[in-house]
Length: 136
Image 1 (cartoon, rainbow, N blue to C red):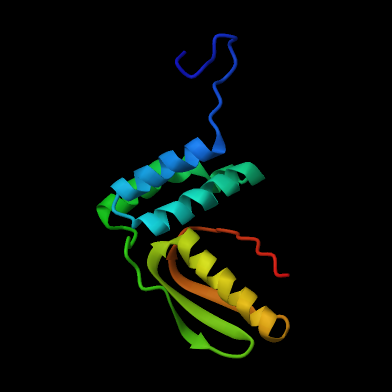
Image 2 (image 1 turned 45 degrees about the vertical axis):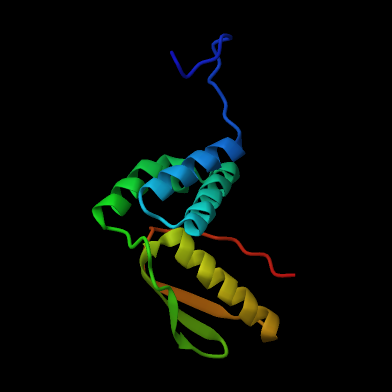
């Protein structure tokens, strides 16, 4: 019963503390600090939005995949094809959070430059990651 408080309720941890823990775990699995911070932040955001399947519940899997080399910890995320209305992003088998952040940022840049745009990513290891981006 170590996960319960004295009142019998489940113990709670702050989002900041959980993000710090996730960042340290990802860094220990050789993800660079900057990338570990972003992935941890996005995992916590997923949990806070109610997308538990893409939150910290996946942390042990990500750590194992990073340690086994199944996820590229130092990817070269880049644009393969760039057109006025589209872009094809090669994720280089990176954490999906990183690839989708890159692709969403690129889409926002394109939208700001002249209207509705679309990006597509490939070679990323993260199923069905959804990232909402606001453009103002």
